[in-house]
Image 1 (tube, helix red, strand yellow):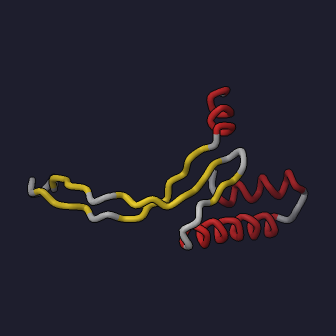
Image 2 (cartoon, helix red, strand yellow):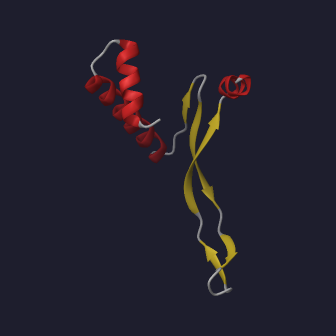
Length: 92
């Protein structure tokens, strides 16, 4: 399911215009990104937590040259599902 499909479903279920639901989704994404960029976690009850973690340098072998190389550390977004979300998925 993509953003457009979510927006259409939201519009039908909430009896609002598609444009309004699309704007809401865009705004929510914008808020999550801003908070993560500023170093804050984003907790959405009964869904999960988004946070930034730093992945350490990683030593790997280049498959083309067989030479060792280092992939530098970087920040990544990590999502930790809530207990309720895990239980919901497990019931299916």
